[in-house]
Length: 215
Image (cartoon, rainbow, N blue to C red; front, side, top):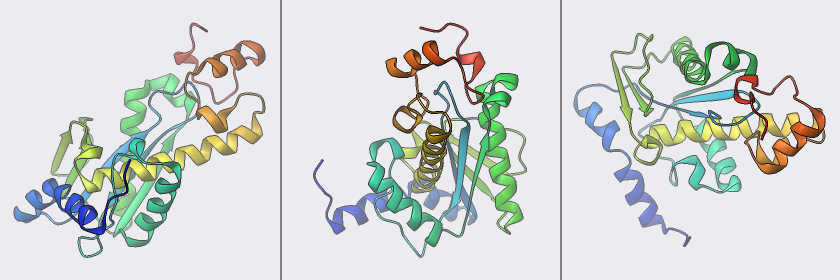
């Protein structure tokens, strides 16, 4: 992919402010984006990220975390932490995923993120969220946006926080559970991962509810 010019990056950032601007025009200024990483893997936690961006400190290059290289995600991760008004990253472990199912675990992680933002002094007036219909918060407006991480800077920032954090968690597990390749596939159901499970069995971080049938 060709590298975008500064002008193109500014144009893209402005385009991805559509939802944020809509709510600011309604008098809502504490707008949090929220997203998750790790709903599909066979192992490891699901991680949610939430972010309240500072409109006066634009972060150029934000996008769906899956569309970015690992190097670019890492760079943006640091910039998000530096420039955002507030952020939170929360995880729910595999045993809880097995107990309450992955969707409910994802929602639990997201609700915890909202609580953390509030504890940091930023009580969201609006949640922009990637497709999930999230109940159980005190946020007045929750707007689930299909493919929101590619349509909203706030959601994109949250997706990067979640993705980078989860990847780093799985890289740590790679050194704890040798032979599974967690640093490479990050817990997803690759052929090599299934082969490792057949050879070594399941670890404490495997989601048993995802592995009722070993391929």
